[in-house]
Image (tube, rainbow, N blue to C red; front, side):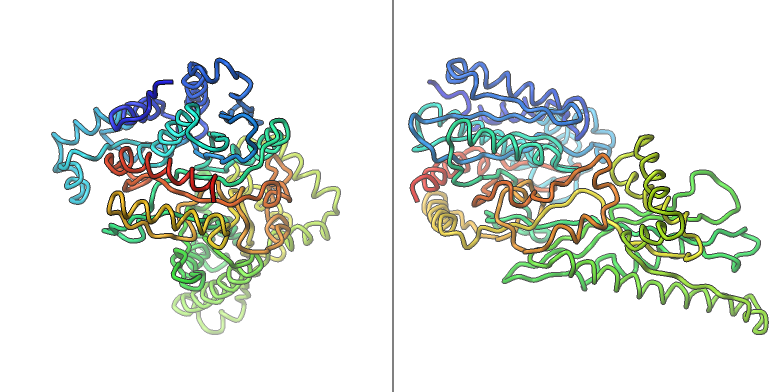
Length: 539
């Protein structure tokens, strides 16, 4: 069979056809791109002869994922090629929004408006070897090269089977990957497959601005999304010391958590980035001269070998420090406004507790049945996303326990990514050495082996976990679990195989200057991947 996805030009055209689908997470085009992939592959002679090897599987919300198996007769060893099809939004593109999903046209337009680009992006543009556009780097280039590998497998290039897995929703909740786990298990049994490894195609992430190193990865970093609900004591602005403003409370939490060194974890030569807030706002819906009663903040916390219990302890310690500073602020400001003898009547305190503790407090006051009824009612009327609905469930419990307020409540929202690593797996160790030697000898490229891919990936649900942490420590603080969201308790044990990520070269993921370098990505990488896959089968 003649290969259609082989040269740099062919791969660039294929990438552009994928990017043309504006598959922002949860949009209709996230469904359409899977249908497009199915169409592309269904036209191949191999899948015309083996239509059962090309499948789509529905997600519970109407989206779908795709699997495409190329099976060598009598072979059992199978390598999974993992890609996600969704991308983040394009609000950051400003006046270039209409071109964000048209890479060639956007790149040409930027050449006429190069002064509007940051200096480094402008320098890359001038080389003529970079393609700009949403999804070019993250991660439709990886999917493009995987399709090329699948085509090579159709021509009998490998001593084993390749299974392409293309999933939606990686950028939000990884519902695509969670749905894929039982699908992979079913495929394994139906076709008598032995999953030898998973290869992901996420792009290289720079460790610092200006980083020029090349990387491959043998694992993926873990992530939790802790939230803090601050429930204050409302008051009229004319009586500011008769209450406690939740905006004040949330600001001191931010000082304790944003970029906090307490959460930085170092394993070997690798270090996790510190926490950063992904959401912070009060929950007052309309303007009035009453202070907001509640506010919420959510933080991206990355980890490698820490346990959830370790992270919980650090989060609660930070909240306790914030608590002390909130009360000190309140007392200091009161001293400038209220006379000393009048301050004797001030009795402000703040309680720090977890969602689990708050739930028990609500049950003590209203009974288990009534609390469950209220939470079920909210679930039946739900029209919010996972983060907002998690917040609402906690806020409702806090309203039942006003007597212990003001309060700071720790809880978790989706998504959750386990930390996984195959760095010490013998198959991956040997393959990495072979891959590095090939890249060095053939292209003069020094590939550094990084244990944890820092950009987050769906490998978290396939590889060996780095931290033996009970999932219950997370789930008991996750209000949405079982209420429209289900994180399987055995999620980290369903499939467990060695993992590796060898991906394209790009810059600025999730920025309007997102771009892909074409020579490495579409000339060197396809040959490097072909070699690496052969080593995975043979080692």
